[in-house]
Length: 607
Image (cartoon, rainbow, N blue to C red; front, side, top):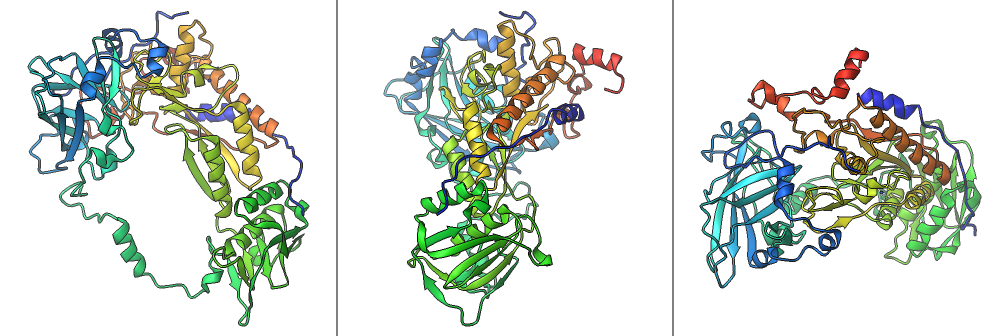
């Protein structure tokens, strides 16, 4: 099915070009809608309910209340609770991990302390405490609590019938068992929150409402995964000591450039001289990148009308450095000459020159000649804005840094299970639902909260024009943007957005077979709603629509869409793995019970 998507996408791509003026020179109801099971592997002290049942237990909450954080009964408990997590053991803990259904019989223990600071006891038991768990919770070793898994990493604990309440100014310790191992504090996620089932209100437990995990996670004392683990963790101190053992470079400190040029020649009696700025002659040879040069110089307070002349020229290069991004940079006290065969080489020559400036010493340079070529044609940096959104301004600042480090490809991950971040004309649900996370079990207004984002509405996406602006901005710094739209797996944001559309009566872009009864668990603990069903014509229609719209953005930007990334990984049921000891009826291939796929396999045996 990955090949199918690839062929479809490849058939759509075409391109065009463009330019701008120079500045340098001198986002109805269906009875067949799928109900998701909360999990597929029953575990001790775990309540198994369908997500639909979980939805029905809570009162309806409107959008205004959701955006306001649904302040209500939940805050009474949350405001008097604090969370403390203490990592215990990855092994030698006496727990039978295999009995709990752990993959490869691997599990670890952790202690959760809920400290209650109220002056009066709290006896209500109609609440849940939700949190993000990157490893599956397998057991709660306290008879007063049980747990459940909702979707992805969203997990909760709730009182059992034996729960007697929180005593005034007392703490409750809850031993927990998780799958695999934990070796660092960042295996924990922030923003634990209380849901009061009497009014559906939510409230974050304050000491977890932070990115500083030290507020509620005790420092780890061991990083050993297993008894034979010989891994030595690296921290600031150990890294400093290791670096101190590295032989120093013989090159003059004033000539150190990152990345190191192919060859540098420094005259024995080369001068060190001071400049007031650069005056670039031949800037038109830079093409679009002249705007990037001008902007970067301005941001670094380099006078574009300074007293040191830079002469740009296109010409032949020595055979050992021939290439479109190669250059010769000849720096003398009188002038600097940059020679390259294409504008990209001239751009990188200027980046090297800027990098050589000693800004802490009145803009000084040293005479030298640099012959440079890239060691790798693809020098990329990936930014995942799907899971954690970053503003357009942040992306642009990132591109600036990439240019200075001579990185030429921005892999922009725009979609994943946890978010869809690009406006697609004609498919408003992708951003109206898919770009938002909050505590909405119906997922009609947002995706379920994940990755410690808490219960309150948080969102973010790039409008069509934002993306065009990013493309143009990157091109002016010799950076190619490679958009990523995950498919067929890691696509839950798209799937649930199109389910929201289907609920309104439009099935034309539906990505999930409503009659599919396949039970599976993805590597990030989602069900079949995480994977686009490739057997449905509506799925192919969606992909075609998506790529045509993205291509249109590239065309408008004047930057052809030559490359794209569609993930293509982990479209699988992890329960099929050899590490799980499960009955055969819990080991199902993706889409094996999808009527759409069964029909497709009959009509197209090679599908």
